[in-house]
Length: 383
Image (cartoon, rainbow, N blue to C red; front, side, top):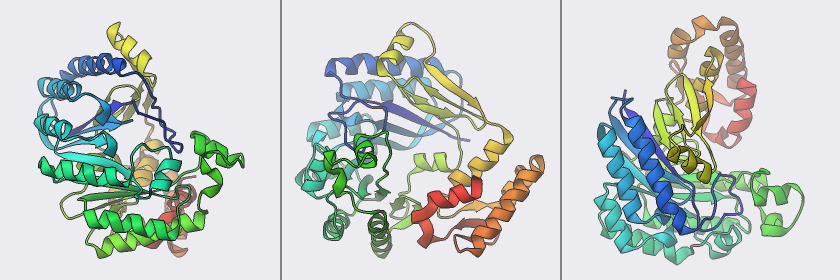
């Protein structure tokens, strides 16, 4: 089985109000030591795997903040240490960080897919969310990417940003469809205390325009509207939050949803080999220190028990619109956990009777018009 590789770059220009990731704003002089540490971690790990690597994903954070020479050194380290048979090499980028010179360097480093953090085409929404770019920056970025020959572009929108209205949402979808990227992600804003906006909203405060967040029903309506419009425009809806033109599904992210192996490098990066998950230290300074001292930055090692494997098959598999093959799960996993599988069968039948799950031969999947309540379905199934 082929392997995916994820590189974490935990640096940003500013912290978005809704962000709950382990990222931070740091001086640029910390970029080079970090990139060098990632290269050393890659070199150390390379000899342990002979599986071909067919996807690389550099995410964050804002990887496009790194000097292109740092990114080139990281990709060179990958080529030196792993058997690369790349079909897809993705770099996350924010619109305002993109220049013609940078894009040319990315192409030279063999990146062939850019995930552009657009999130909205409304300047008021972008400003309230703490984003650095504006609508015009998105179009300039697209122009630079296409001029350099990158024709696999993913763009995202967030449903539920403060100040978002049905009119502004429709306009953002209009603008995105006008660009017609090969891949689209639509995320519904999540309110949690891990972000400044979430904490303020849960406390009933007004900072960060917390009182201007649309209500849950409106956010669900935004998602449904985008779902229908993307389908009409020829996009295939293949995962709860993701759409693609034919042939442009994210090969790397499909590994996560199909529970295929991947290795993560960098601060906070996660890895999975099929039966164990582990993560690196989240703090970039601690991560770099571990690498420089010759010690492992890995932590949070978790061997998965059979019941966890079984539950994960449903939890990640049902995110895909194709669903999961119940017959395969029954054959491979159920014999070891008959009681748990019997409970899951009963819950599946109940959710099917309630119209949340449907069957197609041996496969089960979420009913498409119930995707906005997928978290609640997962709780009912696996809780």
